[in-house]
Image (cartoon, rainbow, N blue to C red; front, side):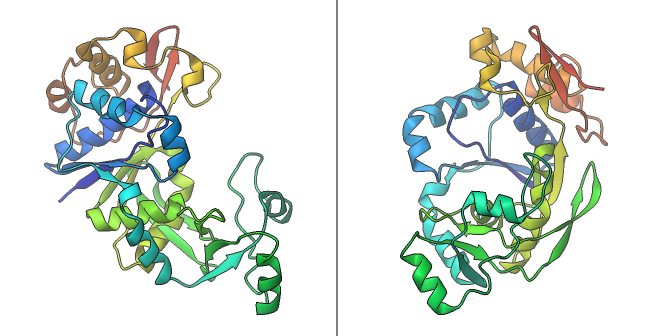
Length: 296
């Protein structure tokens, strides 16, 4: 069975880009007669407290558009024992590097992901003890220099290196790459629909899925909504939520469905009926002057 999930972080209201990705995942799952699950990624409790009430508004926004999910909402903050057990089952080591040290020791395009060069992998016990007195360590997985290949509906086979990425931050918080993998395995996720900006992380997450005894999901990394400058749409771009724009649910569905190439459908049932069997939502969209247009 096709089982997908949508996993917002409750830090701000869902804007048109977030809702477009949610709609794409819902449509792909429903077209296959599958399930669409909901997970709230609320591990960062400080941000959650700062955004009090945002989770409720996010879920309400999805329901208003007809994006109903299957089963109960899963919250990461309630699953810490699962993450703890996963870390205990993996080969790991302590890392004392700062972000600046990692940036200086690794190479990546400006603003890109910087693979960890393994600086702390071979530290002696005495050196680790000394450094613990200076700062708490993060916990990294020892990947052994692996590579992994994922299957993406748009990009096909994507192979990438798996560096020794962080599992537990030095503040004791479980890291995103660990939590999402543990959750997807536990929830039985088989397909993942998300923005193309996350494609680079897929090989690492799929590799970790295999290490934890799961089967890697199939991916659909879809085009993003961007502003006129080509930057990913964000709240700083002004009125970008349906409420801010004064859109009724049918109007918001029509706007999003048109940007996905389905025409101005006014309900999710109409959008589902308009879905061709080979639709993959490759193209992104541009939000400009109150319009949401497919990018070409």
